[in-house]
Image 1 (cartoon, rainbow over the protein chains, first blue to last red):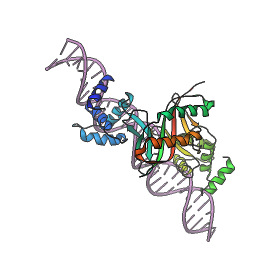
Image 2: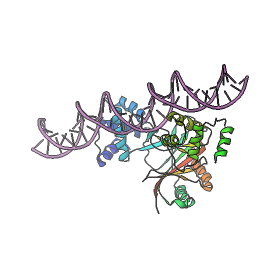
Image 3: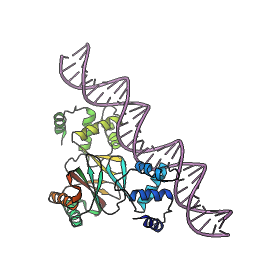
Image 4: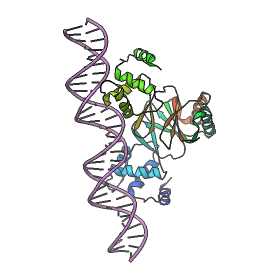
Length: 141
Length: 141
DNA sequence: ATATGATTTAGAATTATTCTAAATATAGAA
DNA sequence: TTCTATATTTAGAATAATTCTAAATCATAT
């Protein structure tokens, strides 16, 4: 999503395109990392002409999540990370560095996966609307 | 795991079987829920003859995780839950109630799953040592 | 009995986040 | 434009979960 799309997206979702929100969204859309609110705060503070408060970062992230432009990721205790990748996907956590990498979904397997888990646990009668896989491991060359 | 096994497990892992640790471990082993440290604190405070401090609950949970008798679960922001089920398994989160239910692994699919994700994302050359699926949805009758 | 080291404790400190109420900015009407 | 109503931002206080600290207690081996 480029800047034009961003403005359009804000408009379509009734979000006022304030410089704070735009800068935060832009920053997230241009990184492959999964930064915390604090990291985002540090990054956008340098880009904006005016000072920004941490509360605004939290407020902005909240509305951006609400309109579906970003997602929250929970892979470690007591820390929320934000992800520009709103497509259905999974995460790989490098246990040596803590780095989080997006993992593309494998659609063929997905239906099978949910089907089988439904069959395997029949007592509980789930209706599964979504699922997320966290892989743990190391990168090798 | 019963009380006898618990004492044996503590002994084998060089853990002093203090009443606090034993009561916490016993409480966890006898619940199917996934309580937080605070919930565990409330529960064991009633069972112990002496007062217990929240710090002890955290300390005990830390060593119990370390020796592998329990696991931490991260399914919601800024809250760690504890799980007696140390077998490889997954979780279903009831999005209406927040309840977390253990989901048995489906071994046949597991290897296939990891295999396929390795193949699907070849650039990154993962060595996956572990993975965890969080399912979201509702219970139906 | 006594020393040593491990464990527990209360409370302070820390970290991430949310809340509050005042100040400011924005968009639409006049 | 200017005015007005509403939304947004802000600093700092409040809260929640967790970790830290240093003293007190406990268990075990001498």
